[in-house]
Image 1 (cartoon, rainbow, N blue to C red):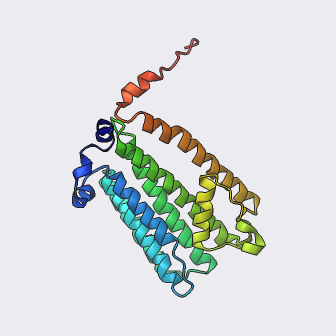
Image 2 (spheres, one colour):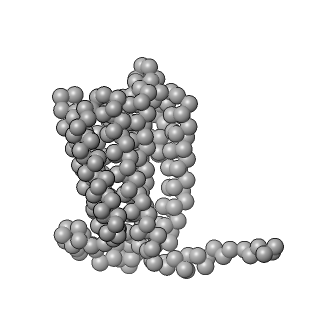
Image 3 (cartoon, one colour):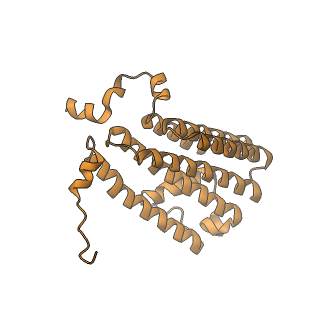
Length: 246
């Protein structure tokens, strides 16, 4: 058991928080930051909604920046990301949350930040020579970011067509409701308290449910079973059958 734990976690078990922040592939710490983004995103207040909207973008931007650092992003990616973050924060400050334009801008900014973090993590994960515990944590980070990304898409739909999300009774809901609905759909729990109304929303919900299930039963399950093995070794376990017509 101790040997398996060492293979999964490696030497990072004894690292300090500072070492984890500075090191590459600190996806356990990134996972915690994504969880903080979820908690901040679930805060709701009618009195300070504009402030909370900016706070959500700032926390998400910080998570994105750490994803860039721990994934060893290139300098050009840093520059483009900083420009994106500045634009997102400025727009969140200028526009007023609660209006169609404000909610749409907030959703687009959140979606772009999540998309950038997803691209950065996947790019780094693709060059991992050995499947480690950090590889599994990176895959879990991607899973949570997928839920955040879909929540942003639902937010945009709710801003453009409030009745197209949950119908004329529930309108577009709040940010926490959209986060809740996104992860309930991603995990296919299906409580049924919120149901997609428009055909477009229904099809987007279908894609999220499919992505969530296929991702868990294939990518994450395969990674967990292959921890400690090199990619070439994994590939050799699944040889490609030659094409007889080639």
